[in-house]
Length: 164
Image 1 (cartoon, rainbow, N blue to C red):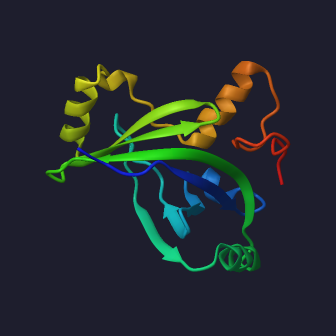
Image 2: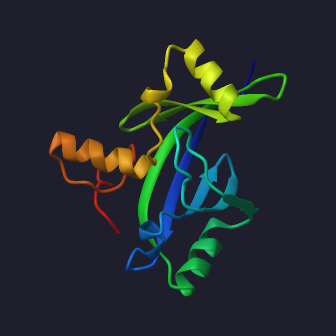
Image 3: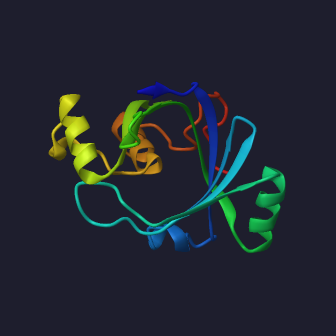
C-alpha cells in the first residue's frame, strides 16, 4: 500500500432553508483541503451493507465564490465538519483505505468494490454487520445525543459549537 500525506479537511454542507436536500437524502458539500476546493453532490444512498450512492464532484478555484454562488441560488451552510485524513492506496488499484480523525473519534473508510471492501474489512477484524454507513453528520448528532450535549458543528475548535 502507498501512503498519502495526512491532510486537514474543512467541509461545509449546504441545503435549502427547509432542508430539502437532507429530506431527499442528498448532500451538497464544499470541501477545502490542501489548497484544493472541491464541490460535491451526492444522491440518496442505495440500500445494503455498503454505502453506495451517485456522486458528482469537481474542483473549483475559490471557496468564497462557490459559497456566494450557492447562497444566491438559495442554499445556506447548515453544517460544518472537520477531519484529518490519511489515505492508503492499494498498489494494484483494487481500492483504498482512509483513516479519518474527527472530533468524535477515528474511523476507517474502505473504498472499492463490495468484495474488496468485505475482504479487507475481514482482514482488519470487522464483519459486515459491524459496518457503519451513516454520514458524519448523523454520527455527530447521535454522539451529541448520547453525551447529552447541544449539537452544533463537528469542528476541532472550541467556540464553533453553534449553528450558523
